[in-house]
Image (cartoon, rainbow, N blue to C red; front, side, top):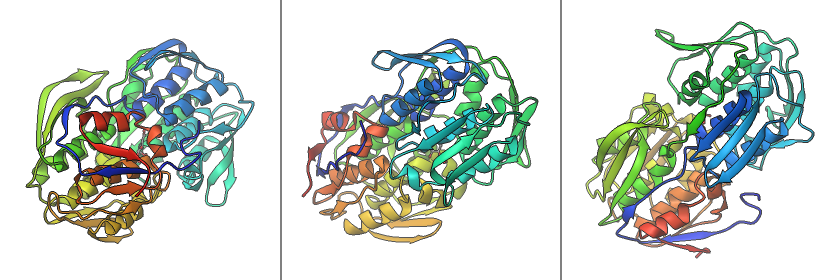
Length: 450
Ligand code: S3P
């Protein structure tokens, strides 16, 4: 099922207080990787807690098309019988990755060093996004790619028959690009090296080690130097996918801005490459308690108790924090609107090439809701109106972007007048239980516009 065959407007009204437990689904980044790495291992990988969002289901389908056996046994419980590194079969049809940049970029990397041809496409959002950032480094292995103008999908990738290992310094802070190069390096002889100046999410490195790859990460003055030894035999794993901190961000931020709220959010990642939003919220004065720190599914996690915080103040978000909260700027800008003072988000131009141009989408929607913003290519500044101070009363365009949809619905829960989104259907890509989970806490959401 497509995420957005027909637009589904949705409206959020002043809500609350939000109370109860918000158990969010599995991590999207780790879910994609569990399926892909499982497909590269020899034998059966067992997965629990897999996110059954459309993005991940599209990756499962793609792994089947490349020859892996992927089976769902129950909610979140899946197995993957892998074909081994270099064992992919040529897919018989076009690979449709739907809305998922992570899916398409990681899969391109995975097939790039096996001699076969595959054609990739996606929905109207994914077809606008740049693939050159992945196909440029893949070409160093000997891979060829033929896409539309600007390196856009649909794109045909011809895997290298005799790949050579690569040394590549990332020109953008992108875990997708890093992971695509590492995945391509799996089937190249010798050592593939990726250098990242700013650390990005490290799930590929952690999971590759878990699957038995030889990989080292050295911290140097150039940044992290990641060295992978090619052509390993990956061992199947049991993967317990932890909950997604990027999904947890929505109930957490909703509780912070909806008067009287007090919620419990179990198992939120404290991985330093993912927790930038939580550091920022605490600096803004959010009332969040981090309880019971522990390790789950190989990731450091804590349970969060989050209470309405009517005294949050805008801050300058340190630009070097951006990679650790890159998906959280839309919801942060909603919290910023409900705080006092200015929240300054610099160094965020990567937001312009996400599922939508997120700087533009948030700026236009916030303005429509009566919030003053300033923006340039690399910056978003939100002028806060205080808790309960945002007028709302507008319909915001989501541009086939799940996080834009959920962010404006959270704004509607705290604004004076209801906020609608023109299309909530993309939410299924990452957080299929969003509506039920939020209404269960006490949010007022209804299908339809205003
Ligand atoms: C992801 C990396 C990030 C993030 C995306 C998931 C991943 O993208 O925005 O939602 O799983 O590697 P970039 O690598 O483009 O920053």
